[in-house]
Length: 237
Length: 44
Length: 223
Image (tube, rainbow over all chains, first blue to last red; front, side):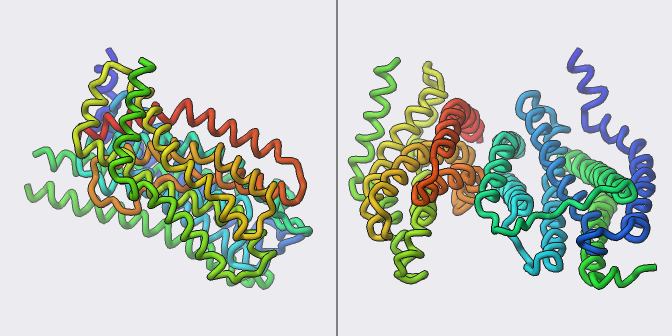
């Protein structure tokens, strides 16, 4: 019964067929969310009281950081499926997600750094959020590096799954220890990202951008998974 | 059309620019890869 | 079964006795790294005192990571690892046993030499004591987590610095709380919460890490 379920929905071929149907909808939804978020975030939302127009960087920084974290959870969940159920499609999802996640983490770091310059005068600050994102970046890169050294494909999937699971278990611990560390070393002037008072005109574009980034991840993930599935088919013949 | 962004223009636009760059790079890399693979399949 | 575990630990210690001086290499590395810091940041008392917990912890971390590369390597080469995997005893316990002997062999020297290094970095006595306690609680966690990485990389030749790169992010909580306990002690603040968390991390990893290491070992040997 489980085998039938696997073949019908989760086998690479079935997934490929479904993904081809799903893709246009995701692209459409992304276009809608992204256009609204971009236009409203850049031009319609009112300027922040404290940060002026500089706060608009939030509309790309926060979504990329959130997406980067979400992708890691997807990766770890796929890892569990790979390790416990030996699902090929989960392994493919995990491997593809890692690279996309690394890109978003990089983006979060760069936009966060650019945001920091006008706000605090430095290109980098060791605050809780940026440091957490930096550590997440290292976790992604470590995963990709581990998979690149292992030759045997099945071991590669299983080893990657294990390190992803170990990483996700440690992620809350790392995150809270960094927050705790940060509270100790705060200067007398609290230099955190002052979350702008979220008026609805500011919030909706942010939600739209977050949705847009999630949808973009979905689109790129599907494209890359399709590529991987095709590559594996070619290697078989 | 507030292009100067109250003096923060360079920061805001460079962030959004880098974002568009990263998103586009990902999109194009994936599409190019797919085109390359489909060419291999067709030639088999 | 207890006797099997003890004989395994005895075996580990016997193996190390054959390469007597090599056993102390991580210790030498530890001492040398610590000595690099006064040479680079200057011998100012106050600065070294402030940096001392961090320096000693980072140096210990590096020494441990390097010693971890060899945790399973020799066993894998000699085929002993395959024997372990076929043993009737639970792999988790065998792994725990191996980790314990590794900890006793490699971390005790580090902890014992810490007072000397602490004095050279101008740490007062009771802070050295706190630092040693944090090392006592924290180094097992480093080895437990590192064992997972070592097991994942056991079959792979020349992985070089991949092991540190892989597990250093996981070390950050231990590092933060370990060093902060020492710093809080120097400021005469309470150190209960830091030690509570170090203890919790130790228990958590004692529970999970050998299990994951066993899974990783089974993967690697099938290559």
